[in-house]
Length: 272
Image 1: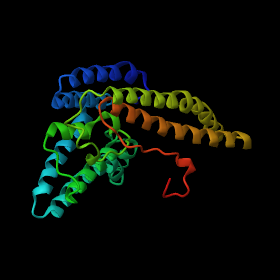
Image 2: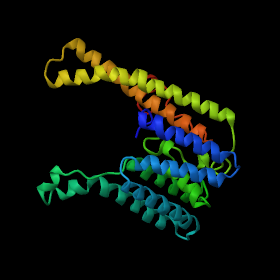
Image 3: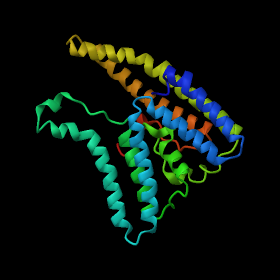
Image 4: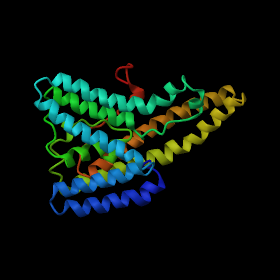
C-alpha cells in the first residue's frame, strides 16, 4: 500500500487519524503507541498477512538483542551474533530461490514471496544494535515503545531513515500538539500533490518513451523528452514520499529529520 493510493487515503489514513486523536487526549503514551503499532501492523499486513510475523519476529528479536548487548561482558560477540541473524533472514528471503536454481532449474521460474521493505527494516534494526554497542543510546525499556519505533508505518517501507536516538524522547511523551498536527497535514498534502499532480502525470510520457524504445521507434527528440520526464518523475516520487512520511510522522507527534535536499543541485556524488 502506498500513501497516494485510494485505499490508504480513504481507509487507513482516516483510521489512523481517528485512533491517534482519540488516544492522545487520554494522556497515555502507552495507549497512543499501541494504537500506532496496531495501525502500522494493519498497514503492513495489507499485502500479505504472513509477513507481519517476520516483522514482529525481527522486532522482538532486536528488542531483546539490544538489552543483551548493553549488559554483556563481551558485547562485540553478541553484536556479531544478532547482526548475523538479521542478515541471514534478509538473505534467505532475497536469494533462496536463486541459490536453489543452481540445484534444480525449476526454481528459476519461481519467485520467493519477500516481505515488503525487508532490506530497509533489517538495516534499521542493525543501526539500533550498533548504536547500543557504541553506547550512543540505551536500549528501549518498553517492548511496546520499541515495536512502535520499529514498525512505524510512516517510514517502515522506504524511509526516511530514523535512528532511535532521534525520537527516543518523543516515543513515551507524545501529547496533544496542534501546531505539529497542522504542520503534518500541510506537509502530507504537499507531498501528495507532488506525487499525484507531477510524478504520476509525467509517468505517462516515461512509459511511452520506454515502449517506443522497445519497439525501436524512439526518435532523438522523444529520447530526450523521456530522459527529462523520467528525471522529473523520480525526483518528485522521492520528494513527495519524503514529504508524506514526514507529514504523517508529525501528525503522530514525531519530528523526522529532513532527508531530501535538492539532490540534482549537488556538487558531487558524495553530496548527492
